[in-house]
Image (cartoon, rainbow over all chains, first blue to last red; front, side):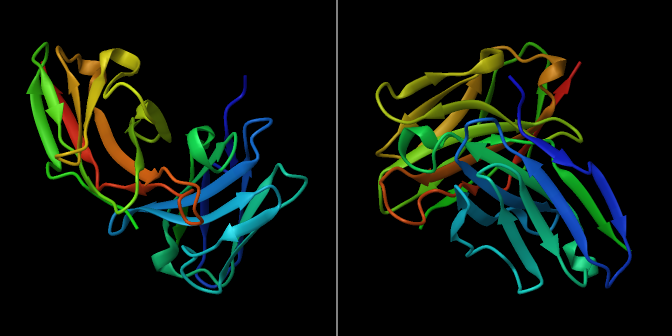
Length: 116
Length: 117
């Protein structure tokens, strides 16, 4: 079946602009995660969704970052007033469930964000 | 909270030689352990996982790893590497108990495996 998909694959934006990144999880997966991969910080957790709720937002770096998930499926990560330090690859993952042995996460190809 | 240490940032290996990529973790609770591989300009692909049971787990592409609870390690091994194994390898951990905050993965800093022809 189809894996996790993300769009766009690449995004170049100017400092101060808002961007939206999209993630389509594997069908039937109730848990969805966003991570960020950057040279200086490695792979960092951002936010976790179970269904449409986000019980763990502890990794969001500032209030410029927000995410939502609708219909228990597609998720959008929004970055407002982008800064150069937001440049990174944003990875989305999904799992059958968020807990226990069903929590094995499968990753999408990522969105490479470049802020000029 | 959990943490992961991958001491080797780069590992060069000759083709057809064996390789071991080291991973050590720290956790106050039981854990699940994972190895992911990232090929250039791609996302993360799951290589193998330890959830419970046998401490020796086998994954895709001929890789295997052994969970050692006393040494808090989960080293990745392959008896004979191929050019196509050139990639970055990430060890990751998450809490194995049903507690809030155990859903997310904590990653190591990665090991870049380079196969020399």
